[in-house]
Length: 323
Image (cartoon, rainbow, N blue to C red; front, side):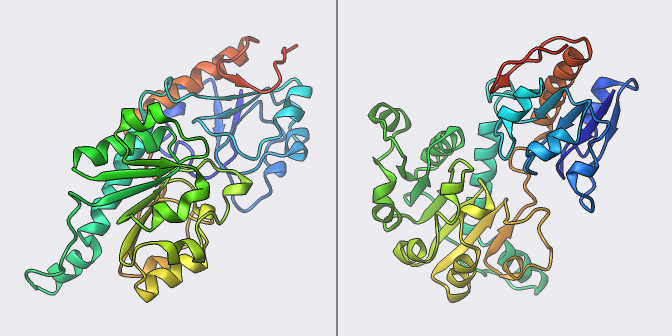
């Protein structure tokens, strides 16, 4: 059975191959070729962020399953797949264990890394200097969550454990959620600038949608408290790249912790990464070894179900029947 990785960065340690065994052929994604030219003999394609429109689906006559080894499905023509009798599946957070907590932990790591000036500390160590750079206290500071999904909720709990004040914006504020998480403020996105003006740290937790592109830009950075820090573990395009570079270069923002980018894999020569107040990681927030193994097991289970002609688990969109 042919399985095609249809996005870069998927299962790079081949945990899926180890779980499935030798009866399955797994082919890596080739970033130098159009996806439609790579799926001709695939019965399963594994996706992440590369779009899978109707033309890609039609280029795979043997295709039975489009599987997201994770939660969010973006850019897949689910309706067209269903009409073709192809299942589309993704895994809810509960099935994967606690990936939201893992992502939140990484967000808080980035928060600490920028507050404690980690890149500058490494440089001072190399220069044999003591007592520099000066760092920022986290306890008692205000964290603003832009979006309060699963990762935002978990980060709120972590931040409160460090003595931080947490405020947030959400499309549909929920008083019960605000009480549960101990939020000092929870308002709609219409009041984003009010929240940004109070924050020492801002962390992005928005869904990946066309309307969230450039959600934070020049006006939002101008509204933020001078010397604030930005954390992004959601998606790169939610932040206007040029505006972020300017805010960091000018000192308007004290620093940024980034795990996601506008194009991935990110160019190591990107000028943004060269800024001394940026801490960058290669989109690893949710890729703990614990979740990696669980996702491999869930993916293997669905592939085996498809091979037996059975319905896979966690199907989205149109329900179909395999012939």
